[in-house]
Amino acid sequence: MVQVGIEAMNVFGGSAYLDVKQLAEHRNLDPARFENLLMKEKAVALPYEDAVTFGVNAAKPLVDRLSEAEKNRIEMLITCTESGIDFGKSISTYIHHYLGLNRNCRLFELKQACYSGTAGFQMAVNFIVSQVSPGAKVLVIASDISRFIAAEGGEALSEDWSYAEPSGGAGAVAMLISENPYLFQVDVGANGYYGYEVMDTCRPVPDSEAGDADLSLMSYLDCCEQSFLEYRRRVEGVNYKDTFQYLAFHTPFGGMVKGAHRTMMRKMAKATPNEIEADFVQRVKPGLSYCQRVGNIMGATVFLSLAGTIDKGAFDTPKRIGCFSYGSGCCSEFFSGVVMPQSKEHLARFEIEHHLNDRYPLSMQEYESLLQGSGAVRFGTRNAKLDLQFIPGVLDSSKGKGRLYLEEIHEFHRRYRWES
Image 1 (cartoon, helix red, strand yellow):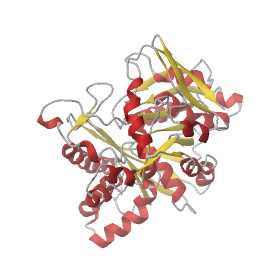
Image 2 (cartoon, one colour):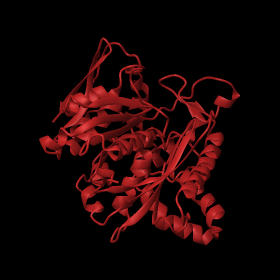
Image 3 (cartoon, helix red, strand yellow):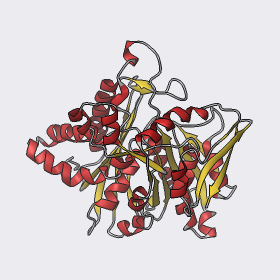
């Protein structure tokens, strides 16, 4: 069987961010409860940013590093999102166009809440493993923007979402999947998946979210346990504590991951509280590093955690990472792969942390104006011209970075422009 995995990966964590401690103080959130989120910053989407711009801005550095011959071997482009802009037309078509990819390419989009990125990733892996086109590459882009206004409904939908606001982010992760797994070599066939119908969170209308936060937590914990047990059933000799040198979780917020890991260590390893805390710091905390600065970016979040693990972990020798992916509604999967010593060098080329450090810091006044102005471009907007100087400092801070932004919508067709 051929080797398969992630050849290259890049993260786009937005053009602007907000210090969430500042947000918590502004919203008068309970300090102790807020601290349990383990959040530092959240990426904030501008009115002229959407799932297309985030996806292109994540993928372009990967594509630009390819030779023309390598670029032409991208035979499939999978976009993974719950922030689509049309019920029929996939954002993959826009992304394909602005990346200048070969037209002999499959283009399509997947939706399954926060599991979508893993669904696209596994589809790409299976395409490469099938060897129907030896040497082909697949570009998988998970791109999402959070919404915070709860839809009206019954008592079950009246949950206070004020604690979801600090963790809801915007961003994208782009991955090139191929026979050259320089970053992450997949353990082919080592998968445990688990899913069922549950109304934990949803987007009943395109521009808002609803759900039951407590039910979502319980479903996440259930799926973490059950998907791992299925993984263990399929892979001989596995144990949660010793098989994986690192763990990357879908991260709605860091506190949720810490709670899930604590539960798993109690059930699977009978660990003491001190052992659990030390294990969390060693194996899980590296994967939170970028998630704490971008927020929950839905289908891309587990791969944002993987990127943080590779950048912040120690890989002097090959090490195995266990990955848990969860999407509301629900579907989940536990899978794994190996990271090599050279993987850190390959990922470091994209300077993810530098990009996060270089974003524009929003004031609370600017953030509030964004919340009021973001309704100018909603799902189904027919005609609009975007003011790229809505917050002047953002564009100024992006000068020279070659970013794509939404310029206008004309008869539903979105038109984008490069800002050099």
